[in-house]
Image (cartoon, rainbow, N blue to C red):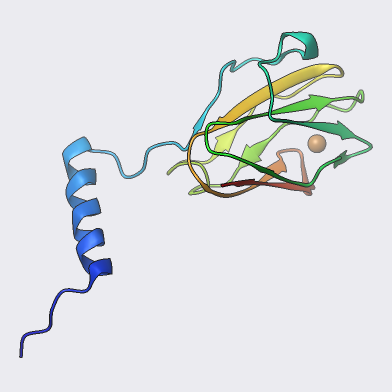
Amino acid sequence: MNVPMKPRSLLAALLIGALTATGALAADKITVPNEKPVAEAEAPPAAVVVHIDKMKYDAPEVTVKAGDTVVWVNQEAMPHNVAFKKGVVGEDAFKGAMLKKGEAYAITFDAAGTYDYTCTPHPFMRGKVIVE
Ligand SMILES: [Cu+2]
């Protein structure tokens, strides 16, 4: 019995072909302009700024467009960062640099999707970037 290939299976087959060709399982979905923290004034232009204070991200859920940059700024003495688990922004986990007070960290989101993040030393700190 012949079953026509469903579009989804076809897409999967095409994806596997593309992945085999590049040798990578998944490309990163983000670009980080500066691996090291910068002063807030030196941060790239941001679609949204998320401030970190009192052990929280002040905007726990933000929505941006693909290609937009989100900048996190730590406003307290306690160091914080932005980290993604495996499979969120790429095959590997991603751990952003720790931010001291007044420091900023930018991430450009290149692909639509929902990106949950946390703070490495404070896993109870959680946030989400929705990219449309
Ligand atoms: Cu933290």
